[in-house]
Image (cartoon, rainbow, N blue to C red; front, side, top):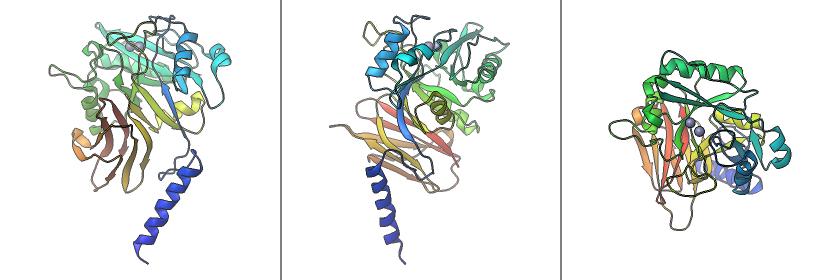
Length: 331
Ligand SMILES: [Zn+2]
Ligand SMILES: [Zn+2]
């Protein structure tokens, strides 16, 4: 039997599963639906300009399905708000906090996602020890730690992060205007730092967030909402399932590019991009050392593994000036 009928059968199966339902097994056996959310936002409980209800309502009305209110060293219990705003499979608030610590005037901010209780800074004798102690506390409180904006005040280097255990998530994009996402002046970008960690064997995933503080004025100089988010493939819309999917790397991060599907199999890494009128794309598949393994302009971007890749991840750049980052697959 030739390979051709097999391939046709394979393609038809995928097309059919697209048509029938949104909940479908992908080629890697992962099931679930896609949910959009923001994991970093402030309210009047710290230095935001709007109440928790106003902030959550903004996200609910702008097409998001989940949100974490992450005030500085304040745990905003979302139970009451969920009683007002949550709706099955439509919207939910994740209990969270931005653990706000420092070492030698360097800000060390770590979000605790799906926390069971408030946590307070643990401090330490170095940047990495401070991060470690805060991460350990967040884990002990049932939360998923996410290291925020490493280049804010140029506080945290890849070498600092490389010393930390149990760090699974960090911000590769933060929408605040002064967090230095792209590096500069000889300091690496967050994406370059990510590749240093991945090349060193640290299995870290990259999220995009708003870090929104300002909802009542709009402008480039303000930390407004709607600039960075994640789209997560989870079994259902509960805080536990969303956070579990993030810890497992079943999501992509975006500053504006929408993806239809991300599929990884034994042979390939495939990304299907949702195109808008006039929009063009360049997708880079990236491996160890930040090396570009391949580049494509197609809206179905496929990388066939050649063998020997330590990991493969992708960056999808849009002609509109926005980006999506998909998560590393370790080979
Ligand atoms: Zn912060
Ligand atoms: Zn923040």
